[in-house]
Image (cartoon, rainbow, N blue to C red; front, side, top):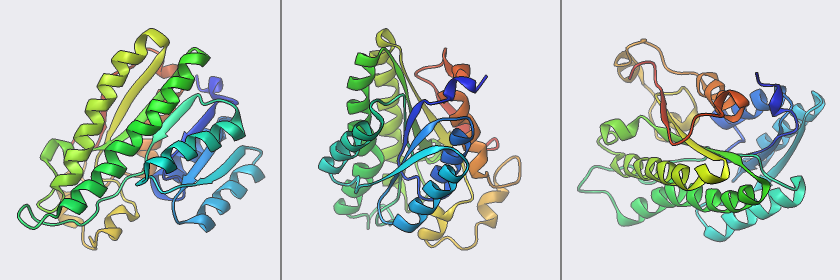
Length: 249
């Protein structure tokens, strides 16, 4: 049921490592042409592109700082110039800036966290939406977080708020996109074992994993498989949904 992905043009933000790279490998294995966005990890992005092309796939790398609105516009323009159209947009890039307690949280940290996790996905989806309308349809998949359910941790309220905004954008865009066969969904990812947590200084995550009903951290492939499902024809009657992949968390 995934054969329809062959030659579909897919843009993945934050694709240089972890979750994004796993998505890229899985989609490319079914014949999708993938755009690999990265911010700083040029070497990792280039290595992933080389890996995919060695295996007979089609891939290209695109650099961009999604904290800047002009970079969002440039990224979509560069992707369309290279591939000619966009069939699937996966808004995967995300980060927490300045984690801090409620009373110490700085406005700059709030603004940067919202810029990357809510504004950038909206701007990219807005551009993809316009192109997909002319093409007769497409799919947009936003990667959210189970943090929305809990309002974040004691130091990541702003991250949870940004992801909640992204989920609201998902539902609104799905309503607007339905008449044009543009399907928009979000995946609310649980605790996934990636470098995201190490970047925040979380070295001992055992207590967090213990709270997950399935008693293990998620793997990037757990999320990537749902991305594959939604991007394929298997997801052709799903839009406006927030689907949780969290081991019961």
